[in-house]
Amino acid sequence: MADSITADKAHCWHPFTPQDDWCDPAHDPVMIVRGEGVWLYDANDKKYLDGNSSIWTNIHGHCRPKIAQAIAKQAATLDHSSYLGLGHPLASELAEKLVSFFPEKTLERVFFSDNGSTAVEVALKMSLQSRMQTGQEKRTRFLAFDNAYHGDTLGAASLGGVNRFFSRFRSSGFEAEFISSIDHLDHVLTSTISAVVIEPLIQGVNEMRPWPKGMLKKLRDWTLENGIHLILDEVMTGFGRTGTMFACQQENVIPDFLCLAKGLTGGSLPLAATLTTDQIYSSFLGPSENAFYYGHSYTANPIGCAAALASLELFKSDRVFENLPGKILFLNRSLEDLKARHPSIREFRQCGLIAGIEFDKESGLKIATAARNYGLLTRNILGTVVFMPPLSVNHEEMTFGMEALDKAISDVVQ
Ligand SMILES: *Cc1c(COP(=O)(O)O)cnc(C)c1O
Image (cartoon, rainbow, N blue to C red; front, side, top):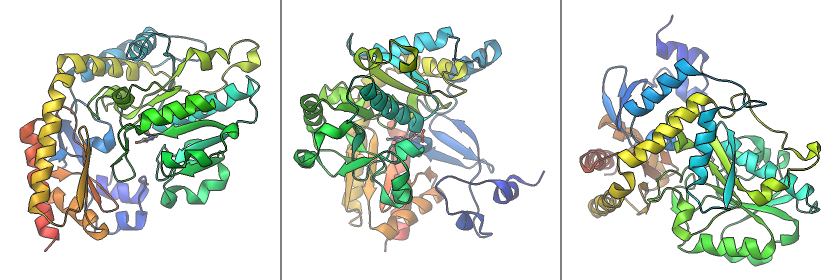
């Protein structure tokens, strides 16, 4: 076999990546070979802080023994069986645990899939089909927000408000109307809308931009007044990232659909879930043509379910929610210090353990790249450098990340 970088440049195709830059002989890609806690190690055994939580997936640190053991045990017991026509106990247990985060008679049903895009895709199709089966055929459109990101499958992408990614496919997906804030709700033609989709509390791909406090609750009231489903995309915000298990809990909002993925397995395996209410579910009962004809081969994969259950256990044994407030405050102070030292920081935005540090557009990319030299892996979104470590990060590790950023900023900005 060729060395791994040669083989990569010859045969691999990376997501969201201009491949000519990637394959340029001058580009020396980092190949990650090992992970432990918040650290990732490259092929030369150089270690990096995982400052982007491996694209927002990792919760408890890498290769946590409890998750690794649960995976190994399940892989040796039942690797996969079809969830179509068969069940398995770990999916039952996981579904029961997921709905237990919400009051009884609210979110009661769990539909499993593989990733964030399909979790959203499922919610969109369920919303539309339930309209068809309850005499509301006119509700065929969706409402979404400018600069939103809900995934890359065609349905989810049609709700994406990031034009640089989605504009070329705009005419291929669902019909959607976009607004920039809830101040524009009065202009929406409510009678044709099936559902509104939003990332609660903070938009991730939109350079980590938090919504105004109280906004989610107001949006929820509006959907109830107008008979519109609320789909919450907690693919990024779920599993403690914002300081509570789910972001919607901070505004006491329970949606009609809750989409979960990235952190569901603690960041170890692809698994997703769409939670919904008995009310939606009941519209799929009755004649067999009312059923939800949708699914993927690896729906509710048992190894993924085992990893998810182990991750939920770690929330308890690591006392995640007892430790988070101190970490969130420490991150806030560290960001204040960093900003005071570097006038090139326009502002920073924080929600829980998610932070975006905004520079001008050119500097953002350069700083994120330079930070690697100092052992911090992260990414920029336009001019905003993301700092979003696993929830297991400690103060010392956050300080390491901040110092790496500090040096990278000094290198890039004169
Ligand atoms: C990452 C993300 C998705 C898509 O999830 P994939 O697993 O990448 O398909 C959807 N919504 C939000 C808010 C995300 O951050």
